[in-house]
Image 1 (spheres, rainbow, N blue to C red):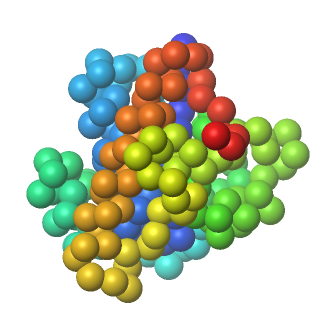
Image 2: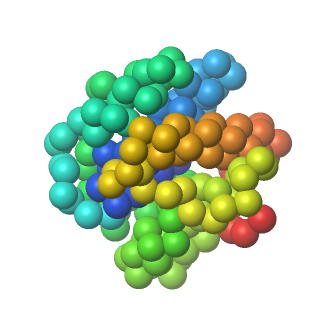
Length: 164
């Protein structure tokens, strides 16, 4: 049985494509690529069709992640039907997704940092307006959360998006 996950941030050019790239590699390395579908999207259509921010691509490449083939897209209500789990990068994204979700899909919505073990933060900060260190911190946070998510997926049929 296949599971599907979509990571969601605001413009789909920094945090969510990073989460997609990090998690995709972890899934590949675990030999689960045939069982888990991974995608990302933005709550807003500011950058539809564009590649991830160059700083995001560079920071990810330094750690061996290739985000160059990704393109931004806007999250659509139908994505709640296409994906088993919808993970928001911050509380603002979560609130936007909550308003869009039908009551029958609300159980699919969660926060990415709920899966983190080394970080206490609820939100993955948006590095767009900051310096290079922000992109590195986002990678640290998302690597940690992605490991926790993958571990949970290995232990169950499908992770739940709810609170820790």
